[in-house]
Amino acid sequence: MDEKRKGLMKLLEKLQIKTELIEHEEVFTVEAMMPYLNHCKGVVCKNLFVKDKKKKRLWLIVAKHDRSINLSDIAKKVGGSGGFRFADEQILLEKLCVSQGCVTPLAVFCDQNSDVKVVLDSVFTSDPTEMVYCHPMDNSATIGMLSSDFMKFLKHTNHEPIIVNLVDE
Image 1 (cartoon, rainbow, N blue to C red):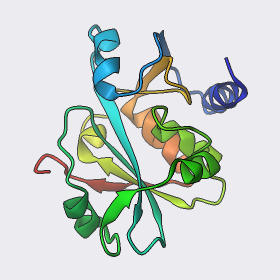
Image 2 (tube, rainbow, N blue to C red):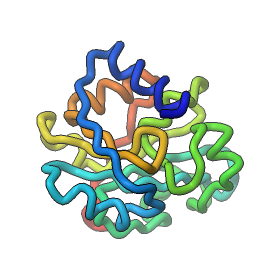
Image 3 (tube, rainbow, N blue to C red):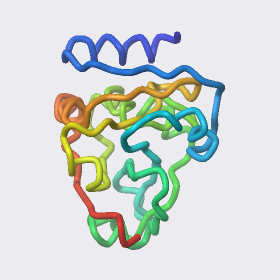
């Protein structure tokens, strides 16, 4: 386990967040991850790290794994100036300490200055007892936690999410 993952796990323990860890082969897409999660009941995260076209703000869009995402529509809903485009991997490494294929909402604990705005699919907040699944800082595992604990984590890291209904995207 690398240092970033250890740091995340220590924080989750400190926050008294119980987790379920599923080790698996390294995966680079949510589609490749899904066969390892067939037994899991809950919502799996698909994550897109973007910047607005005027390059003023960074955004992490966290959607249900099977959602179709329209970046232009989401930008209009949340005030992304000029629309969204994918951010460079260097910025991803700098702000969230993960590379492409490892993006996770849990990486916001690395964003000490809260430079990244989190846009969260409303499905993650509809039932506080539902499990949420995402990578724990690397793509060779998936971690699950209660939706209520996921929200507790985001608030603790000063990343109060912008909740958006992405069903129509």
